[in-house]
Length: 577
Image (cartoon, rainbow, N blue to C red; front, side):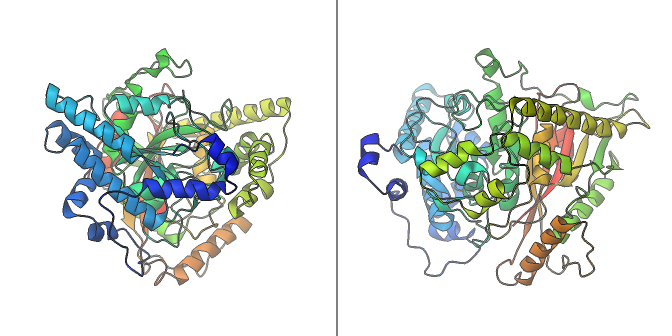
């Protein structure tokens, strides 16, 4: 969408104008069938009922299968693009996840790719014809980038993100842009411009945030692969809530060149971009494609580390390659909900059954410091930049915006000296965590290779209730990367409320009450939960290489596959609906 400046100035209702442009962009041909008069809460099966069988067949293929089929000539880029445009348009009508579709640009691109293939007998690149989506603030030249601030409506990007350009040059077809919350600082996705994005597995619940538009779209198979961003959990939590795969890399692994952002220059707790996909291999496709462009030749913030696949780092001194998995059951502050604890237990049991995996209990670590460090450094300006933008756009603060900016005890205007001091505290915290990690190898000189831990307190919650960030933001403070992937489903019979629950404190009690409210409605609002694992990996000798990812069928196999290509660090357990 390009909103011309003169049109903006002559139109008093900017939000209505933006929504009209969005609605026009999803008017696909042929038109979509009418939706049922009464929609179910779980809308994930509706695309199979409302799209053609051919469209369903195409859109439910994995990204790696799609590129293989187009490379062999079995599918055309135009047919694939049309199928995803229609499924994405349907997803918008079901869960409100799109800021705009790009049908004209996408189909022109797809036609070019098909012509190139026909004339040359080969693909443009490894992603030839693959439709990709992106969170709205990830810039594409010539398109509006408003960050969901009314005050920024009409602002267009004069350049594309280098990461998006890398995907384009490899043959990808950008076709959809997705929603994000007010200020981008929610673990949910709602804004004054685009409204509320909901969870396709239960539309009374959140898909997570701030990359909730991506997670909802990909969760409905309206896109096979896309870009999200993450400052405190914004890729991992929404991926966990919608049953997809999401990766938060380390902060200097993917280039941010060409991005326009509110956090530009804030290096204490940097925001990162990363892939979200319907498959693990999709994450690898995006990571490898962007890294293979050798962005370090034009972006000096990126270390010159190529994409590599080797397992030398895993070998122990005695020549064996037994995987050592640490298990952190909770953060010592808020107890995960019963379904998360059961999923943790089941996963650990499965890992124990593998003779090549050793389980180590993780010693409790002071996690409260992480939230204090994160909040202080992320909002060192007392939130003035974002609050002033809201004021300029005459926006009311949404409930979660009000909570993060007004109820956060660490929100304050910091002097330069205070920022330096808190950055030093961050580094001390990182060092202490590394010491705790290395201590797991005291007996055999082999610290744990990965750490299994909850990503979030529970499953996707009701709107405006996602207020506990510690499980996800810890890894932003540490700058460890993470991968979320789906694992299992909740069984209300196996996951009852703890009637004898003994809270650790007020936050733990509040979290416990949230699950009690959800469980009481499980027969109607919450017929089904799902879960995901999140694996984060950090190199033993360097913080920069992240080579994840191959498709597997079981949790132990997936852990092995990831660690065979990724040097170190963390596995988390996340809950999703």
